[in-house]
Image (tube, rainbow, N blue to C red):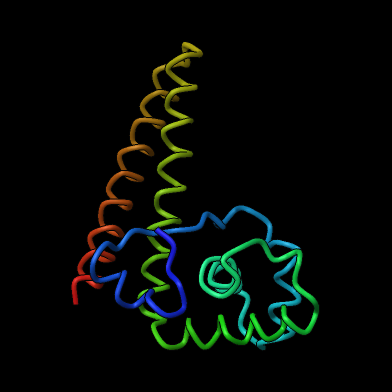
Length: 148
C-alpha cells in the first residue's frame, strides 16, 4: 500500500501494511548523502526518508527530479516523518524484521538442500525461528500502533 502525503495517516489506520524495501545490510543508496545534506537528518532515518520521498512525495523514482525539487522533496519527507515518526519507525522495524526472516528462510532452505551437517541445520532452524518471532513481534507492535 502506498501512502500519499494527504492520506497516509488515514490509510495507516484502515489498512496498515509496511511498504518499501530499503533494508539494513544494504549499502545506503546514492541518494542518502543528498538527503542528509538537504535535511540534516541522521543516517539512521535516511532510508526511511528516501522511502517517503518515493512513496509519499513524488510517487515515483527520484532520478527525474531537479536538484531543487529533490532538496524540497527531502525536506517535505522529513516533515512527514516528523509528523508521525513513531509510525515510520515501527514500519521500518517490520520491514527490517521481514527482511531478516527472508534471509533466515533462504539460509534454512539452502542448508536443507545441501545436505548440511546436523549442527548447521539446527543453527539455521534456530535462526529461522528467532527471525519468525522477531517479525511477529514487530508486526504486532506496528498493528497495535496503527490501530490507535
